[in-house]
Image 1 (spheres, protein in one colour):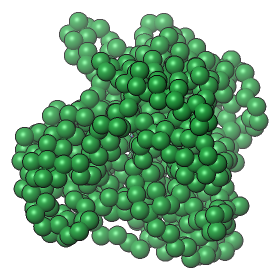
Image 2: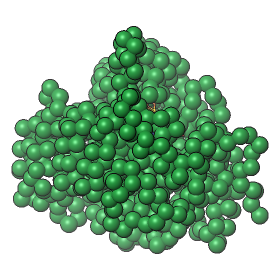
Image 3: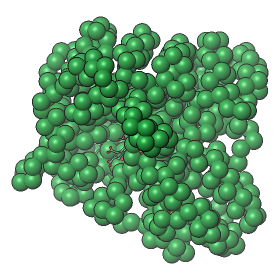
Image 4: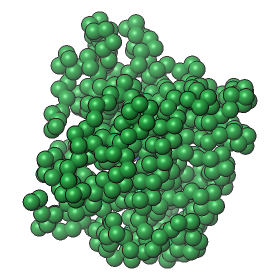
Length: 565
Ligand code: SRM
Ligand code: SF4
């Protein structure tokens, strides 16, 4: 028999109390919205609004100046959509474009989980924003909070029949794990109903939802474009004779950590077993409810599934899961990953339709001096040629385009300067950064606003050692929470203080091995000085095809963390 659910003597975390008292995630949000005295909402509501897909933030670039002027911080809200598999229709794109220009900061952010974020929405425009999204069937339910988040699905146009099936599973799973409370509709949509909504009870979650956020993804080998092992719950598609037959289940990945607290750490998921495809929802719910019942509700820094599995063991987790499923899963089936990241440029699907993957630096849709992303993509969406797919690496695919329309798309890409992928180096194409400053409350250093400069520095180093146009994955986050998945980058920078980062090395190129801390709290000069001899060593002594991450491990530069099978 399994160990008993978490009955720690420690008191429950404060957020548990807020959830319990919230009356199905309603709290005092209605009153907070109506309060004209402040641009903020009540403290408890700042936790509850996350379950509705929004975060209260303030502009950190002007925080100090406003403090000196004795003004309250420049409060606004970030709104994150739920978009399983990252697919948006042209109509939805146009609506989001209009929404951010009217209510947001005029940009769109493509996230590392294939969703949109609109930043800078002030309190009095929150409802208008949610309602405008609802008019094009976009909701934000469970985009944040202690629930299952946006379900990711790999982009793979070359296998489009299976790809379409994977996306259908992602959409189905997202619906299956959706909270049932009507609070979202009541508060934001004035009771408007979405098709297919269900009643108030929370059969999967209960009154206190999950101990912490929970993340699921589906991936289609050989492309590990969603970094499947970093997810709480992962499904690796198994294709036989061209048909999707089932999935290998992974569980217990997660990346968030806190500087100086060794009890918090990134962890890659374990391989649990194989299931036929029809069982995906059932198995996902069993994994999630295991975490609901056994996750740590006393300490939010120790509340993810990765800690439940790490503390109790993989064998315990399997036993508990298989008990819930009424029997064991079969052994995982063989598969292999050969690439990660996105593949840019035009590709032809098996049905002959075309897909163009564009590099969007930092995932930020904005009109810059050369690339006019907002205007260019608006013009593209107005043509209504095919859907827009957000990748898990903050890039964008213009998908499902008829061959006869290709020249129109090429002309737009040229006119608006969107063909960065045609000229950028592999490092610049692959690099990702989290949002960080100025909107993220937790940022200690720059990330999105620094990534392209830093990639250029890495490129210059590579060139100086005769390795120009070599591929090395670079990821930067403004703090150790890991939003750009920096712990599976060959060169990971994790923000420590303004202009200072921990340098992480030793991950492989496929997302199957974590990196390790190499040097702490470095500024840019010191980072480049630390990398220089290593890149020189790699250039001089690498085996054929050996990646930078593999070279650092083989040469003992870092020792990768031990892994429990
Ligand atoms: Fe994240 C919190 C942005 C993907 C781990 N994340 C935040 C917040 C909401 C800051 C906050 O709590 O106040 C950030 C908002 C910044 C802003 O101004 O927009 C934020 N996370 C993001 C996004 C937008 C980064 C991006 O540039 O794309 C990604 C949104 C994904 C989405 O659409 O849902 C994003 N966050 C991730 C990922 C990557 C992933 O999911 O594949 C991770 C690492 C994987 C994981 O969860 O372990 C991640 N975010 C965190 C954590 C650490 C959680 C933990 O277990 O410790 C936090 C902090 C927290 O939850 O307390 C956090
Ligand atoms: Fe903010 Fe840290 Fe996430 Fe970056 S990694 S978006 S700084 S929470």
